[in-house]
Image (tube, rainbow, N blue to C red; front, side, top):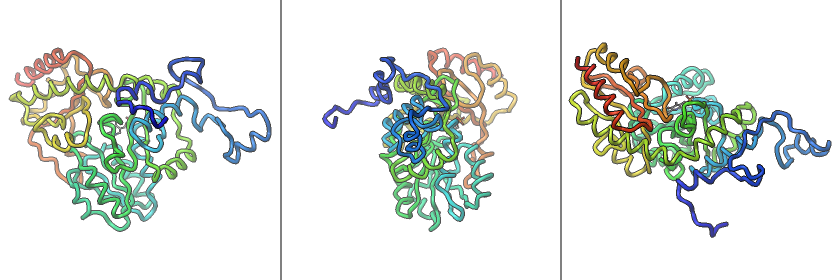
Length: 392
Ligand SMILES: *Cc1c(COP(=O)(O)O)cnc(C)c1O
């Protein structure tokens, strides 16, 4: 086994987490639905109640479809194990609940996904956990805001809406020196684009709803953990019974098989469109870390192996009705939350509404684009017609 060649990422997403021999030769692990699992003897049931039974004991505890997805994601990202949960939001909030205790202090990046911040405000504080937000670009300066009781440094890179790229290695080194663990929302890069555990991250969480599912038809989260943090996460996962549906895990496994090719196309089209946008007179700044010269590009180039199709654009100041005319009339770009499916999206964003430690000072409005798998020339034509409405 140890002599086997190490397959490259695009090969691994095709082969990890499936074993056709277990399922009559079927290529894919089927949707395996079960609540009750029957035991042949009292002795077996008794062993199961002591946690000493080999094999499945109950539908909550690792149905094959859920298990195989967990194995696949842990293997791709290089964690000790993965736990699947019913949504990306469950995945981002779950480590906070599992790892922080009353009296602990938690540091959260100011560019965090809005609903994760809402959980910290509404629930971590209620449970007696202190929460502070920090500048996403703080890097090694995190040292200055760490406290003796800091238990978790929550990171997200690039940040939601504003796409700041964080220096995870510097943050992790400082956090570990003070006994804190680092949680990363790695949804943007996926397990393929940023090898979180190689950069000192302890828990990497994903909205599998986005690129892993990849088709805008599933809600799912993944928590990938190292050996240090896994026991506490596993305990809460078992005690809360938050396993997702095997149907959703089946869709995510199906999505995973094409993740590498889809991301390559998302990145190529996004880069092309980002270059085109930067040259437009209506555009102030393109916030796509993979674009040379864009904010965060140097750290992105150092740490990431790919970029997906999601980025922000700061427009020059323009009346809000003109922006609405642009967005309301798009032909191919849809308007809606979430992203990571095969289709392109565009929405206005308001980063200044979800900050407390830093200020978002852009003069003009922000939009967020998701570049899907369409022909990029058609997407550019759609944007060009949109800019004509913006100017009229
Ligand atoms: C979408 C998203 C989530 C939440 O995922 P859901 O499955 O919609 O709950 C978490 N983090 C980031 C960065 C996201 O973009």
